[in-house]
Amino acid sequence: MCFQFDLKAFAFELEEGQIVLFHQIDDGFNVVEFQSGILLVVACMLGSGRKIAQAPLQFCPISSHCLKMLANQRRTSDLEAKLTKHVIAVGKCRRCPNMASGAVTGNPVASRVMLLGQAPGVKEPLLGKPFAWTAGKTLFKWFNDVLTVDEPEFRSSVYMAAVCRCFPGKTAAGGDRVPSKTEVANCKEWLDFEIGLLQPELIIPVGKLAIGQFLNPVPPLTELIGQLLTYKQGKYRFDLIPLPHPSGASPWHRIEPGKTLTLRALELIRDHPVWIARLG
Ligand code: SF4
Image (cartoon, rainbow, N blue to C red; front, side):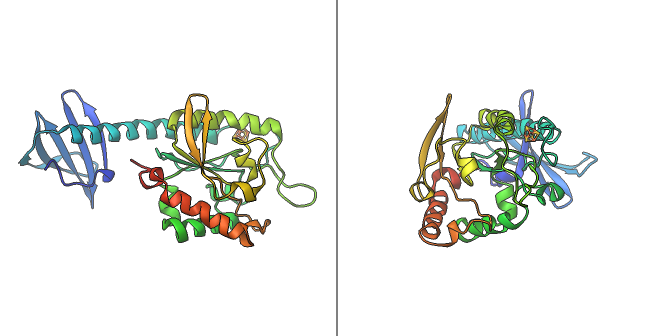
């Protein structure tokens, strides 16, 4: 046996000649060092980094399986650092003068699954996260019911992007303004960068505007929802499982055949191998 820890709980970094894992526990860290194939555990006080104990725990040759897992952890860590920078840059973007708010971003999650929304509503910029209001309630209920993930788990395991990251404002009639072609094209640069960086294997576009980033023209929802499609964008290939927009403004997902097709789409996500291993 190599080690018994839950690797998801670890961040790690490579230093010359050694691999160091930091495992956060209650009020301190266990620092696990691999040196010359020997596993040591060092307990350090949180913050101070002061070693309070050091003891050989067990001798353990580093297997290729371990190294592969460590390489994955390293990739995730690097990716999250790049995503964090990216999300900060998007948050400062003011490229579209007619937008009514600043950008709303999701968490910098190094996930193999990306959710693509349309644009935030009036509440999301105030609450600082996508799908934070009425449509989000329905969306997260779907995920909770069918994918059996709650909202915090979804937000921390799926990268949440949008066609436009800023609230476009209201129309004279009181509805949310549809972003202009220029605004969509401006924000697509962020999306393309994210696809290149994350190389997602499954994208879930939510609503026609999001689906339209991949399919033009957008087929009728009755022919599209409940389908799994493969899409190629430049050198990147990924699966698409479109969802209808969960907004209360459209009854499509609440009445047949939309209700059954929406459930079928959610089941496709639940059963997709990439969904199961989205942080792997
Ligand atoms: S919609 Fe996108 S491109 Fe336009 S200002 Fe907001 S973040 Fe920038």
